[in-house]
Image (cartoon, rainbow, N blue to C red; front, side, top):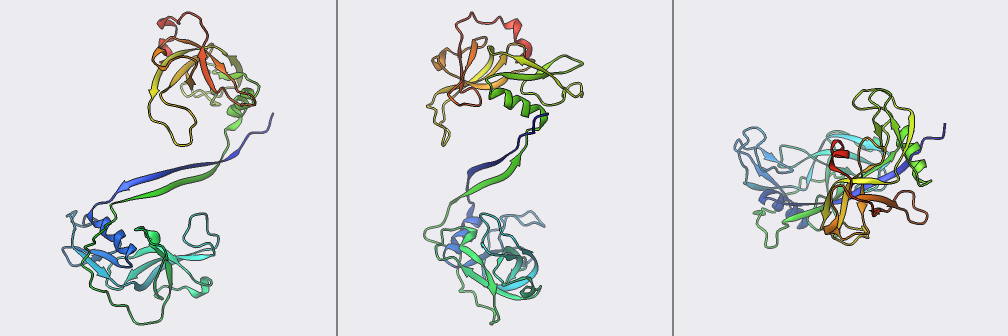
Length: 313
């Protein structure tokens, strides 16, 4: 049996969100080296601030400044920091109740080792040199043995408030397609499409899944399908994706390869986008060295009759 494939993958995209008045004030305050919380109806001060009282669900808008010094309430040592974390050397994750607050803020503590950290230790904010209105404007916390700092009495009003943020969402992982899809990927490198047939319902799955989701039985019988196929459904893409070297508009469709029991997706080219239609007969187009079809183009055959592919929609 050939070795099962595996590869490191990264999923990354910028997450953009707007800010309400409370979060806007909190992040703008960090930019200006001010820590703001909100005061609830029963007198508690919440830091980081929230827009609705977690007890009464009532809206909260009463901003109040707290001190940049505080007390560690609990902690955990991070012996191997990962990409994008606040510090590159080992540090402690800590919950810090800032002076004047009733709740704790999660951040990093720069300490020489776990023996230097304990619940109840006093710390203060270390501000980042370049601040933009984000939680990273607090570079980290650091040990502090002085008196509690005094708030400046800031009102929470700013001339140039931060109204939105962009955060990079990223997931690093190792993906293994398993036995069935490894065979499928290896066949694609030879410009073949190979699926697997269910021993009960006889449906051919492309790409194969290793088991029939309908019958629950393992699949092992390999079946070569295609190369031609039929467009079952499609959409016209009018928004250009970042880092995708394809001009819009283009067509992305579901294509039922001859002999397959379900449709797979692929880009349809070699034809004006407004002439793509259900039933269009297509074939794969491979690029030099490509491990999968670049796109599918019309074969010139008559369109397939709807009855021949209606079950694959």
